Length: 198
Image 1 (cartoon, rainbow, N blue to C red):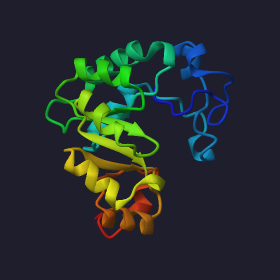
Image 2 (image 1 turned 120 degrees about the horizontal axis):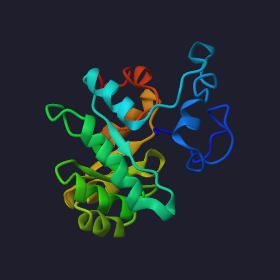
Image 3 (image 1 turned 135 degrees about the vertical axis):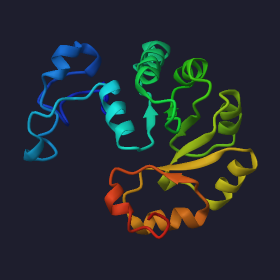
Image 4 (image 1 turned 45 degrees about the vertical axis):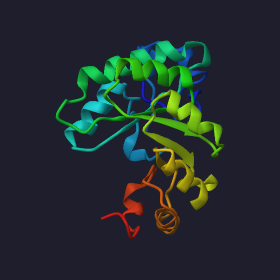
């Protein structure tokens, strides 16, 4: 399932933890009404459904693996097997990201040709060692916790710097000025007003 939270209450009419429900139960929930009445009864998509739609639109994608701590390897394997089934070879490779090293190790073993992004809330020099061990392409950092000196250090170590979650065009322009390589956003339409995005 493609779902941000560990629990259902914030964005669906369901209750409890996502991992405690069967697929058919999750698919029966209303995951759209919280956003807008126009999306009433919109189901939670499976990863395969989401990736099929994204690929049909010619868009790139970041697949963030948010595993239950006891099932990190299994979660990554299942997610990447599903992604491999539907993602077209002709499309740019998805970025696979996670805060969890075990999930990223499993992802790298299964999708060695897809880039890995190590997520972190803030930069610490030891992240460079972790990223190297994982053969990551990028460090994906909270936009509130990046500086030009850190970005330079990360670039010197051979990694791209991606900042999350940026929804303000002025902040996007600041981050471009600091040297970030890419941004994650919840609002691509708003971010189009950024000087660097056309």
